Length: 304
Image (cartoon, rainbow, N blue to C red; front, side, top):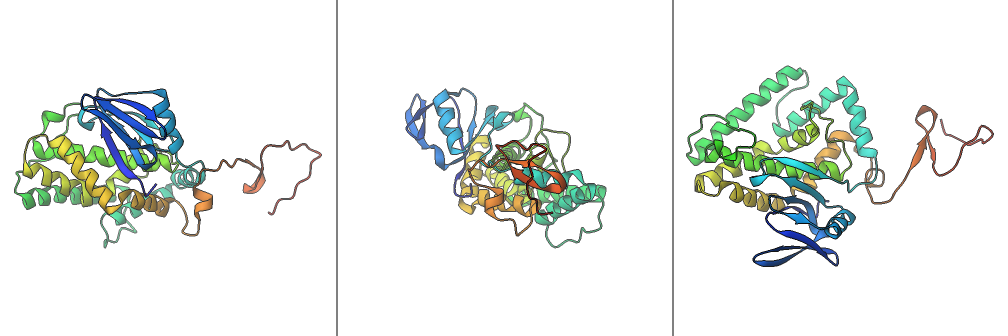
């Protein structure tokens, strides 16, 4: 996962399959993209995809996300690269307990704003402190590039409603959501079980994307907006893509999710891989081999 291109954005073209690559055909010709190198494929307006193209993308574990014009809206996406349930089980266990859910939220804050003691902060206090830090970041980035800033303006479905800086922030945020969703789904986590966000099918995706908002998304967004007010959306996407590929964000994102959800001593054999392994649940947390019947007269040993 960490060795792949973070995302490829396509619009107004038709996707086919040729061997183990997908081809994107438009008025300018045909572009070949090896499917195994893609982290996620963002399909914008005017795209159509063949069954064979989706087949090779599924076999290679590439995420596919259908988005609206300029990436303003997320419509659909899916597929997990990881066939193990270890991550989603660990996530569910921490999410279901209020104490551990708060501990994960605190750890997410530490990852975003290191050096602060949040061990005793309540959820409300965490939200208040996070909001202040993000507002300060908006103002600092605007001052750094010499742009006026009158607050965050975002109208869902209306990309042009904001000024160039707000448009760039929106485009950058959507890119980070795409990367986060790719990683979350590739690891087999539950996108809807968030530790900070709640009530949305992508709550955990929003949690993970926010880890990199002030460090990556906002500085790049304001740089792009300061260069020119023209074509802000596509220029922001390209700038985000190039930067996160350069720093290896996907690999870091995988590590960050593992740090939040599973113990340090859990190895890759139990949290990843492409081997199907199905067991049956028995008493006291024990697991037994699947693919066989366990009748009352069958005795099997379990290490309690």
